[in-house]
Structures are given as structure tokens and as C-alpha cells.
Length: 134
Image (cartoon, rainbow, N blue to C red; front, top):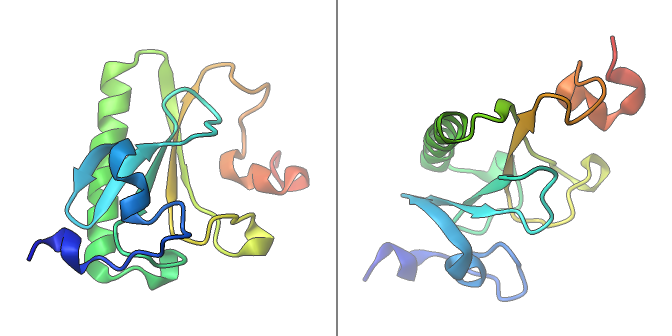
């Protein structure tokens, strides 16, 4: 029996392992990375646990460690291999009111480039536009 055999999959979940296997760009223990199908910038990746869980707060300690490790590896790789990338946003939406539309935990890794927005100050605070510029 392999690790893949132990993963709980929900056939109707677009981020469950069986449904994204062919799109994996990086595989690291209990998590994988795929390209976002609706990227906000070139190189936008999603880090997704292989096990179905709805949000960040359901991740196991090992999944947290693996996700963090993969984020570091991929972030460094992006910065090294694409000189146009001058920053990164890392984020997730947890719950409908926070904008979550697919209820399988996923972490966004978004490459940022100088001038991709008129005023990047505040970064992820921009989810509430009036709070972005402070």
C-alpha cells in the first residue's frame, strides 16, 4: 500500500488529489503544488494538501510543516529563476466570508512584479480595499 492509497478523496472536490494529479508541478510529502487555473499573475501557484481538509485549521502538524517547506522552496525558486519577480504574496481564504470558493485547503503563492499594481502598500490588507493604504 502506498501513501496515495491512504488519501481520502472526494470525487466532487476539484482540489482532491485524484482530480489534480495530472496538474502537479511539485510534490512534497503530504502536499503538492499546481498552477492556478485563474492566475492573478504569471507563475501563481497553489499549495494543496493531498488529504481532503476544508481549511488551514484542519491541517495536521505534518501538513503544516510540508506546506511551509514547499512554500520556501518554491518561493526561492521563483525569485532565483525569474528576475522580473521582486516580491511574493502568500495567502489563503478561510470561509465563505473571507472569499473561499473551493472548500479544500489551498495556499496561494503569488509572484509580484514592480508596477503590477499602482500602489502595492498594504499587500494582503487589500482584501478590504479601504484598509490597504495606511
